[in-house]
View 1 (cartoon, one colour):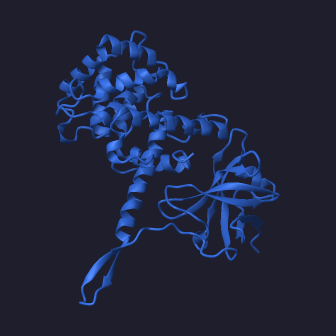
View 2 (cartoon, rainbow, N blue to C red):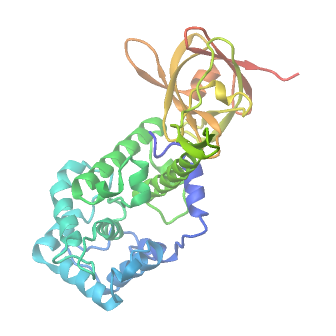
Length: 374
């Protein structure tokens, strides 16, 4: 689980992001009332809902840069005509009660036809005759907020796409699969997805939470890439006194020597599991974080002994350089069994707020112990 890792922090950062307005999008969600979508049983959509989608795209999703959407009446008429096609109405009716947790493969062909009808150049929604691929995913999400994710440059960055890669249905559907798999892992860890919805301010949906987390992750990654590009240029004097740039690749921080590091950290909590236990993570002190392998945007696995068991743990680092171990472990053995950090720490009587030490071993593994401050 990468996108939804530390979901609470990512959601909070997204909701507080200064350049984004949420009001028009919230109107889309609240206008559904208790329904999953804007679509009725016959596949029809009310005109006032089309205007809500138009406003959401213009004000919140900034899709009208370069007047790509044209005038409101023009866009709403195009969208309405596209959705009133008999074949499209049948698709809409099929999708009206479907959520992201449903068997997605059953609905892939319908989703593809809807995506292509909204994004193509000939009968699509763009006023300038260009493809409307990103906009199509946002329209689909507004129509079915419980089902479809949105794909733009930030989300694309988070899942490892280059800009040109997210402008077709195949790549879009891959993101749908990523969202579904991350939600399944959340369900497995927390026994429900309601705990994820509770991290956000209502109204919200599971695909929207995925979008928020992926968007923030994409922004972080772009910022890190930009910083690395600047830092990778070093200047060297030549024989003539001139300076020329020497470009060196950025390297992640790694343990410089085996068996000589004592790493300190604190047990923190990111919320509660369904059984009331803390969702524990380990935050590593800045003074010793360089002794753990870490690279921004990637999970770095390490073998760590806690009590009588050896686990595989994931090391992560935030945009600000804070290194932490995630709440999910895997017990080493013939079968790779999932375990929780809170249960492993309980075996050594460690809990939220406790200080811990991690020792690096000569074989490249680590050992964790609780220690008391005197």
